[in-house]
Length: 156
Image 1 (cartoon, helix red, strand yellow):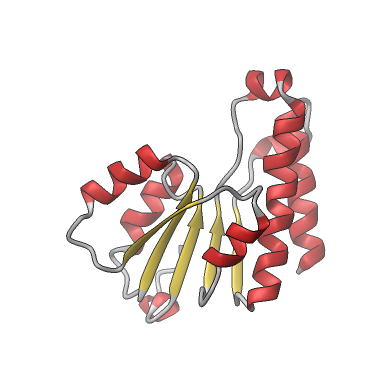
Image 2: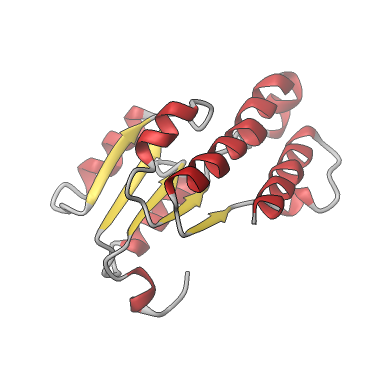
């Protein structure tokens, strides 16, 4: 994350997968900036509740239950958002090998939904979180993240 506090000043930042481990760390760090609003977008309502409970005194935090697979929900969540950090993904390698369609739906089609919604809503910056496994994929997880990276690069 850039050091400049001006980078986040008065900006609304949405984190897909915002209740996951990386998302929670991003929330913690973004709360130290002058961001106007931080939106946690996640399908896991229990983890969202845990994050909300930890930061119940933070009026800048908002929570949207939703899945990156659902384009309409992504569009709704991206309303008036300046920056998106796309951290939502299925990541458990053995589970994805047994459930390849789910991997494609979340990691590839979800990335496409994030890209299309960001373009439609005029989001000024999108950061897509990837993995070292995308550079020379030997499993489905790496392959889906490689495709997602290509989609983001093409959209740029």
